[in-house]
Length: 99
Image (cartoon, rainbow, N blue to C red; front, top):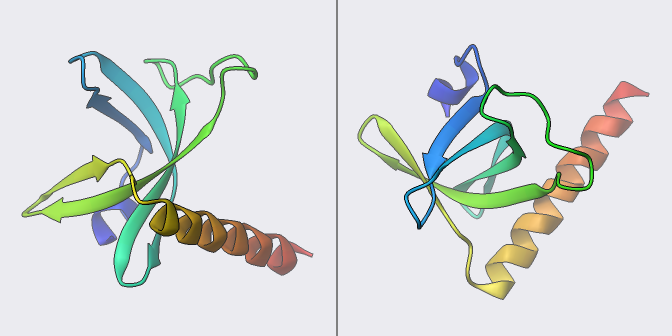
């Protein structure tokens, strides 16, 4: 994930299944069972936060293809639950290290 660590801006624009451009802030990239995952928050096109009631964390599988990355929806419930647990543990570890 070196390329993500080197990014100046963590704002990513992708196209959804309808071809509409969506903007996300990349919050974190982490591994679960040797696969890469990303935690994203939807933002306005200029990178500003959405209204608080619209804000939600999105977890997606991250696939590296040559020099490009693709985000994939996690459809398997068992895989998704493992990713949620790993992300929550990572947040807890970060909180503990700040104390």
